[in-house]
Image (cartoon, rainbow, N blue to C red):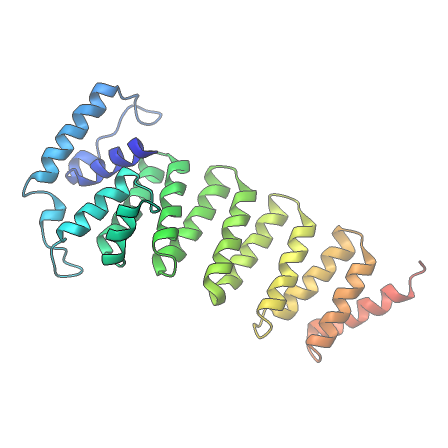
Length: 265
């Protein structure tokens, strides 16, 4: 992981033309250790030159990167753990350094889109979440992680976990994440019990949301239809009628509850 991040960061430091150099037809060619060592040597020379990006003003913040921020940026790309005391001390001085976040975002993009290293991209995105837990960057990173896990890595169960982490961490933004998790549980995992639980959670956590009643109705339908659990379905239908009286969903729930209660045991 550490070497991969160093190589990726050096690729980001190279001029744009160098980044566009493509290998053969089926992806990047194999790279020898000597070529990697040479790339690192050239990358260090470039980082020391006046042409390097960190030696120029960052137009989006109208300032140069400070020495401490450059060290922090290097720590991140060298894979130094955020639990390391030196890392913690430096990060406390520059917790919002935009260069670190922007660089990690570009690294994740490079790993996923150009190098097709989706697993490593997920690791970088997870680091964004840990280093910038309440930022817009973390919110984007969560969603990108879940998409890569589901669409590129075939890890739908991990995608559900990522959406749940997002919901825990971002509160109001969690509604959409829970809906996405429920959809993945149904479409990919065929885990109808998990889907029903997630849809009930949406109604419980976001009772004032316009989707709350319909999500609870969907949960009841899953218990009744997919899980063949009429007792649980009846419980949910009655809950819906009590929490959202007068709604279209409540009327449907009352009708279905009455039908279930008439059925013989």
